[in-house]
Length: 312
Image (tube, rainbow, N blue to C red; front, side, top):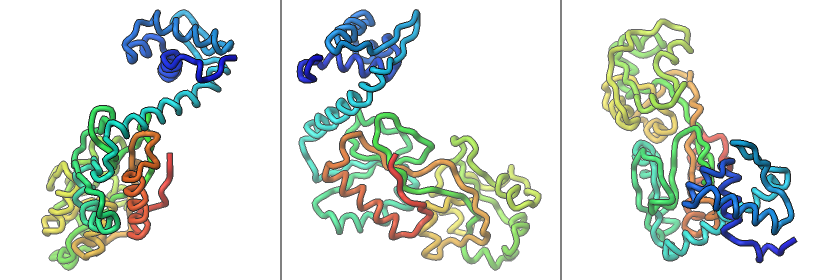
């Protein structure tokens, strides 16, 4: 068998793309070659290795047992190579950390805590891009992103940070009314604030879900205030405009400082999670490692709805 240093890089790249897509056509499109050229490269690789890597059908391909064994190592090798090249593209600049994050999480959770990161890492300047647009790490100068969703994020390192849930919240003054908020039924007499930022997520709980969970008749949910940003809905509740079905992670600081209160124990969990994502192979890059470790420590010390960070 050939030594790995003698194997053609182009053939290995063709194999990795075809194994990932399980399609010569799609892999060829990704690599900007013809399917015939890609198939030739893979056959050449199979001859050099003296192992068949794909079972070829009329319109389908499948990895052989040898192909299954080879694929993870080749994929990991290209991911590490991409990470190394990315560091060259970034010029080795460890002083600027580009962070993409959702607007509500930036406003309610990250920004109030950034002073702690700056104190610990005065040599790193964070640049926050608050956006709901999914980050394209191949096209954008983004180092890390914090995203809320179900995942997975193919090709990216993903670390689960926080679980979220929803529960009614209001300003402290609203508890005493008039009318006072003592039982869930008392919400029928108050304006309900709707956080429509969760509408794109299938199965996300809403006011109807919460009233069903506590076993009481729901009021007219066609009325009330609607906001498409979670932080705006929370701010409306802080100002006394009504009761919001607020997200516990985003409201954690407002609850802790007494700007909001959660009068009931019933919380409905969200299946989506807040996750830190960045390119594979960059775990040890100093500015990314510094932000990751600070973020996990900050979450732990905040004693929020954290169930323990996990790596996926």
